[in-house]
Structures are given as C-alpha cells and as structure tokens.
Length: 151
Image (tube, rainbow, N blue to C red; front, side):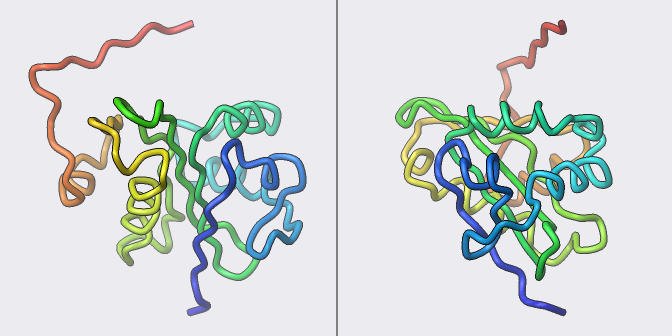
C-alpha cells in the first residue's frame, strides 16, 4: 500500500480552498477530491457543492487531510475559540481504508493542533461512530442534550 500522508492546512485552508493543494502544496484538484470523498463516504455531506466547501473551509480553524498518492482518503476539521470550546466536524475516511488507524490519525491531528490542544471541552456529533470516538477518550455528554434548529 502506498504511504498515507497527513496534511495540516493553514487556518481556513486557503491552499486547498483556492488552489486545490494537497501534499507539498502541489495543486491536486483537492476541492474536487474533497467533494468526491464526501459524496462517496459521508452520507451527511454527500450533496455539498464546491461553493459550500469553500465557505466551510474558510470558517474552519483547523483542517487536516489524508492522501494516498494523489487520492484524498481522509478529512477532518474543527472550530475553536482557542480556550474554552472546540468542535470537531466532518471526520471521514474512505470506506476501503477504514480500520487501519486513519480516522484516529485525523482526530489526533485535530486534537493536537495549537488552536485545540488546550481547550476545556471538545465536542463532536456522530450518528454511527460513537464507539470509535469513545476509544479516543470522548464520552457521552450527559446531562447535556443535543438540540438542533433546521433552516
């Protein structure tokens, strides 16, 4: 198997957002590859447009991607105020590569980023992967409740 490379993008991921940069800051159609990764492997994000992805990335404090050669195989992002709260979003690994520690690599890169590493609480939401996140030290947020307001 080709080596998997983790890329830690600058806040707002301008290289990925505007130039499609991947490893070594080389243009690699990264935005299109992110859209494809979501479409194939993230039911909650399968219909995001490239315009939506640009706005999403621009507002993200921390962005990491995983690459196997020229293929984007993982992604994760986070928002944080740098002291009290952070939220992890959109952690995804290509289905054919799951179970190899890549999701752990993405989450650990997010949690150790300077903007996240010392915050009081890190939140995340998941539909099907609670067991995975509990292995990484997350726990149920009782007595807190998740509330949602839809547009």
